[in-house]
Length: 113
Length: 114
Image 1 (cartoon, each protein chain N blue to C red):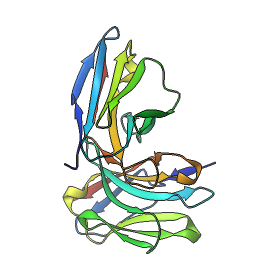
Image 2 (tube, rainbow over the protein chains, first blue to last red; image 1 turned 180 degrees about the vertical axis):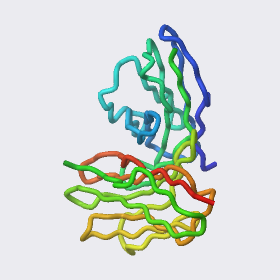
Image 3 (spheres, rainbow over the protein chains, first blue to last red; image 1 turned 180 degrees about the horizontal axis):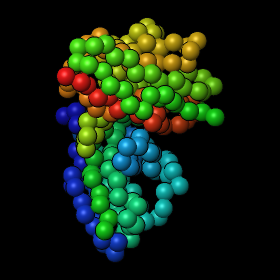
């Protein structure tokens, strides 16, 4: 299995909702990442997990809450989002942090209404 | 400031023509370099990567890239473009020496004319 699987593919949520994005990989990778990508822009790093511990939080608002329950799973919990949070959320994994290519999932297209 | 730059926002080439997409970086030490491709609404697919060694790197889908230290560049090339190559292309770096994770250039959108 050489894939990163993200669910759901599309999500529409209201500003008062709580929802979660899920990311899964079975490549034995020990680093996992969340990126946010707005239309016609490059991906921007949000969070980095290394060996299931949060290594990097790129000053992301607390309405985004990451969780890494085990080495294969990465979640992003969403609460009280704003319309400007609408974007493609990409999950990626790599063998470890450092000189390795990242494998990206297909993303979750999030719309906040 | 540390940065990765893709000077061309949009490039149009005819099918069958050659392609070169530019990428320049500005880091104290040479970062690890990558090219990714993204079709509309999709995730990113790794085309190729450079860590060290041979400066001409072969990738998937007939792409290659050349690392030039003197020019701080890592340009992507393809000798003959196919209509299916139309997509967004991102140059990315991992500045591991400063413990930084993958960062992306602004991207170049490729349009292929019939």
